[in-house]
Length: 464
View 1 (cartoon, rainbow, N blue to C red):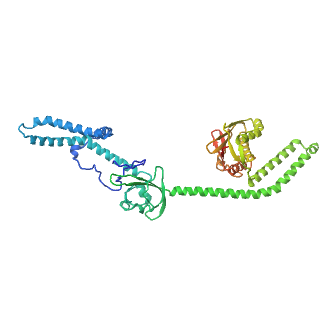
View 2: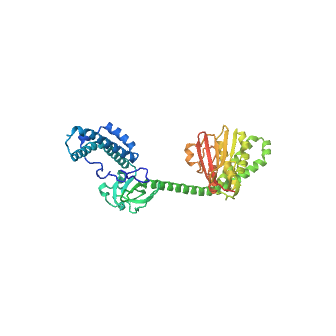
């Protein structure tokens, strides 16, 4: 068992007998009546021997000690047991025979027996690991002939062992080449099953040279399911993009009609109310009612404007901007509402200047949308944290609230048009915000945290 798989985490011995019954080199017969060993003795001896075997010199020393003790015992016993008139040649022959007879069992009991058990246990352990591995494991000689294959490999290719052992590996892997892969590297090939159907696999190949010629271990994994899942994810992403494009097209058509049919009449109504407000109040119409009408007209105008903006976005006018300045201006715009709603704004910015190439008005609009959404999620007030940081490639802005969080039923559709959990919202603000981020080669994500929600904006960083 001295040859182990090089550069492989499994440390598999190159010679695997899981599919053929070759005898171990240690399996020579010994008389069981003489050399049967108790499990306790074997366990103790094996543990001690493993310590001794850490270096070859210790094993040699142990052999010499056993032989020396046997010879010393014989030297003391022979003068007592043998007649004095024996010739020196006969005495030497008896001494040699006695030494052989006495030291052979001693060496077996102390060294060879435990070594044999170590080899058997290691072989059994290795075969168990290989046979119960989830991936197919194939050993191949330097000519491409299959020497062994584990259970997972047989199930993968749907062959019986006798159909594979001694056959060329190209019957399973037509494009196989003797080119070992490095650690954590795989090569994608096509495998061939018993019924000649082909399927994708990932192959890792390691060379395990014995003393005379190199052999190889191939680890194969079926990629059919992984490729199916990847294809499903790709198709789902394409479907979502197609649906989004269709939504944009539909919104553009709707927005054009809305602009002509609603926006202009609303503006006219608002102007008339503002012009005749004093006259209507004198005629007895309560001023609160007029304020409510004007407020609702403005709300309708905002909804129409959001719809138009989402459907027909303006092209960004990009330039290098200092992101700290944009955040300062945005905070100034919302400080009044924050005070009135008992919200404590906490702006935490990087001390290092953060520059991006962007349209400052659109970035400010994006940040306003996120902050105002956070206000709506915090009806009882509380802290609202805005963080600006950077990593190696991106500027990162986080808007972290301690509000009600994102409803689980809309979390996966958060940026989809008309999806909202606000009673007075139409569900376009976050869609507009993500579109702005994507127009600037960035990303916008939203997720729940322990006590609220966090929206995270990434924009490509530039060095000035």
